[in-house]
Length: 395
Image 1 (spheres, rainbow, N blue to C red):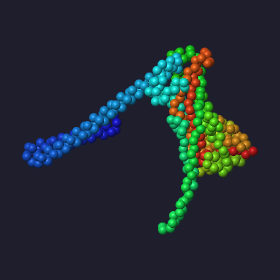
Image 2 (image 1 turned 90 degrees about the horizontal axis):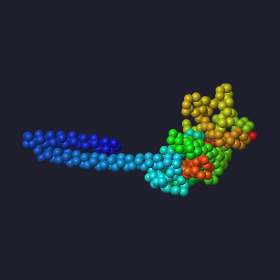
Image 3 (image 1 turned 60 degrees about the vertical axis):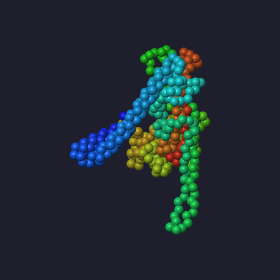
Image 4 (image 1 turned 180 degrees about the vertical axis):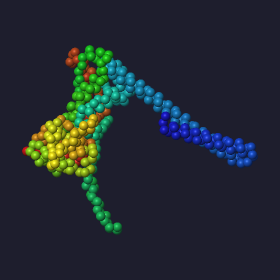
């Protein structure tokens, strides 16, 4: 029951109590022939107010009933779509699937492009991909309806001034806005399985599909978000320009103090190379496994390891109080390589998922295997370039 309906029912009870009190007063007035007209007037007002509340309650109840009825129909459509999709995956039966898909997920039907996975399967795949994809774990992830998403950033430039009470106020400079748009592409997976396995009633076809697609999507996506060139794929962090004095859209870089490696003090320099506003609890270091191995051995001037190991489940390891994200797609330690990144990746990088994952069943190309060509469109790009900084080893 909605809060609005609960409030109306409570009001109806109060008005009913008021009408009873007015009725009692009217009866008492008639019995004593005192203030009869006044008591009857109060009773009439109370009765009218009660009728209005009753009408409001009846309207709200009808609306709630319609919503429940619609939700029931929607649930039936979702379950029917799910059952039909499983029939398509197991047996290739697609009769009526396009119509059920349209009712259940409200997406346009493209028979040549396969069929949309259920929202439940798409969500499950998305969760598995996030667990296997370091960039998705720290970036800003949004869902969009198409590939027209863009964001405006204020590059500053507005100038303030001081004036006296009656002094003239000259026009100040205005701020500069920059439009940033992610690069989009289509990622696909082609998991294969035998028809015999699909015919097994105890085989979890949906679970198999989710895990296989998630693993392939995660590997391809993380590489693109890290170093993709932006052509038919997202543009990764490493594809942008790195500079000691960067302009908007460029990432700041600093040099290490150790040849082809880094020292403990370099991490302090890295943290303070970005503005304080980006050094939030969400900020993190990002490096690959080999760089992590080097970082874990570093000690400060007192002989203490700068690495703090996370021992409990879900607890990340940290350096200088900031968590460490392992991204195997970042380069190994080498002169001039962007081996270590630091900053608020949620503000720096945005991943835009276009709603809808589609599947096309192919039982002919790789007999005796059945392949499932699964696709989705996703974009990615650098948004706030000032939010991260790179540590590059010197030669």
